[in-house]
Amino acid sequence: MDSDVNRHFASATFVDAMKPVRSFASDNNAGVHPKVLQAISAVNGGHAVGYGDDAHTEAAVRKFRQHFGADIEVFIVFNGTAANCLSLKALTETYHAVICAEAAHIYTDECGAPEKFTGCKLIPIPTADGKLTVEAVSRAYHGIGDQHHVQPRVISITQATEMGTVYKPREVRDLAGFAHDRNMFLHMDGARIANAAVSLGLTLRQATRDLGVDVLSFGGTKNGAMGAEAVVFFDKKFSHDFLYLRKQGMQLASKMRYISAQLVALLTNDLWRKNAQHANRMAKLLQKEISRVPKVNIVYEVEANGVFAQIPRKATAKLQKRYFFYVWNEEQSLVRWMCSFDTTEQDVKQFAKFVAETING
Ligand SMILES: Cc1ncc(COP(=O)(O)O)c(C=O)c1O
Image (cartoon, rainbow, N blue to C red; front, side, top):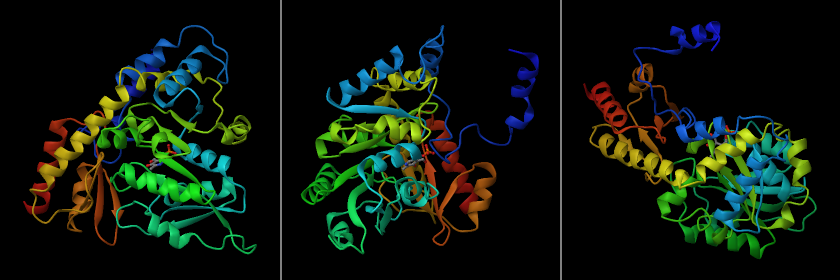
């Protein structure tokens, strides 16, 4: 490596000796799984045709077909926001509405991109635990055929949810049934689909397509990729114009082989499953360790890789000095702690000890 570059990466500004190397802020803050890095490096020999017409993208598509069925269509994109926006765009016209949970990433954390990109109205529904129910959705299903009213077209659910809970298969099936009976479609934001499938003991296909999902935003980044997501169509009738939508949405990677290689790595020899299993197990361990700490309440079921805890308000800043993490709800003093494929038992125990000492010490 160039010596200036070496100096840059060795610079003290990257390393704070007071802080642990791994935090609980987000599974996005984790590094890249070594097998994914290896895969990126392995496809780095020579030239390959750009824009997805390369052997590695073909291999990625084959992997997706092995997991989800031979008759799917899959399109690789850079990030999860785009996977969601483009999925929704493929299912809607501008006068449609998308029903989602109030806590849905598409509603709270995508800067209005889904509305901008689709032109659709998002109808947010309050939930206790991040999960939509048929009962709640049916209350938002009105104005059908009324020219003054947007027409509900898509139910979008997040699996695992933003609150670390996981829809049971029956709950997804019921929402799909509700949608399909009304000429609507079910979109799944699967930024953490690996964590959800593992939590349910299902394959990727059983956790999505087999439950009636029409279009899946498949997440690789939180599962150990450097940056790799995909839109998976289980019915080709939605995907015929998608090539153009992806390009217009600025998501057509010229050097696509490097994104494809990451997805191949995750979908080979169950790496997706191992990574998610590990992250989920670390969240359970964190739950166990934290539940021993007085004055801390874990507020949602720990079903994937996140732990949500209500902590004494004045502890937050002190904890964040050493471990950065996000406050989920300021009013309720609710914080979010995420585990990832590279979280270790020692990380969890050290963190829980620090929380205990800070709050009760
Ligand atoms: C539930 C969910 N969906 C989608 C995303 C996609 O995000 P990004 O556009 O940052 O890849 C995230 C990222 O935090 C997420 O948590």
